[in-house]
Image (tube, rainbow, N blue to C red; front, side):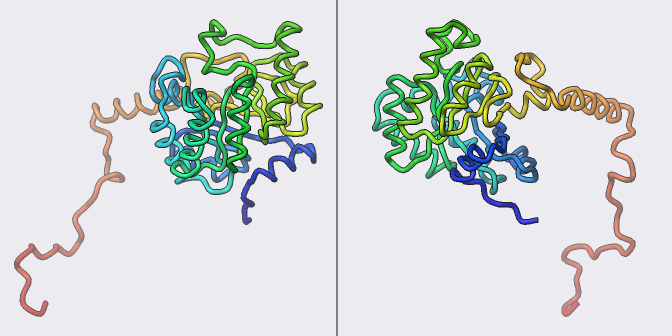
Length: 284
């Protein structure tokens, strides 16, 4: 079966038709190849790679060069899903000009089809500038990890009336600024349902309940590869971390007892010996 290329109009069409959008976050070529064999709609190379792949304590140290390196790796294994690249901390906050320049790098050098940036307020103008430059922008509201110090930790947002109203206003502002979709992270499901119902662009939830137009999870989390922390909103669809640990322990045991490699995993000489190099006769 020939797979269709997922485009921005495809994503908008899912909102209008009521078909849910399935998105995942991935960071490397190996997993990109696996996702290419599925029907996932969107693959986000998130700045969460800082913690998941690079071992940072937060997303804040991630640089543009690191983002582009990983986006390019995913792009090499991915052809049909829509590829979205995250804009890391301080790649867009300073000015419209820096936002457009760095968004352009993610598209031109990384090969992404769209960019994602966090927040509203002053960042709404960044979304507008990038969109007006012809680059598709996904917004991100609620728990925005680049603002983690302002929030005082990874906490659910929009739990009181004033905060909820602000998130809703921000959502409409981002839509007006030209965002084609909106990630809603760690907000009450009732607020997410209200925003989703009233927006014309699709919402993609992560810890925002079942009423969004789509859902996104970090691939490593849903596969059970992140063994230290599992947020409430993450369902582990597999336990690959446990499987990998068991496989490595079995490998170590077999190496030490001498049962690996066995004959099935070793090479034999061909039945007819090869001539030694330099002993060939002329014309042979």
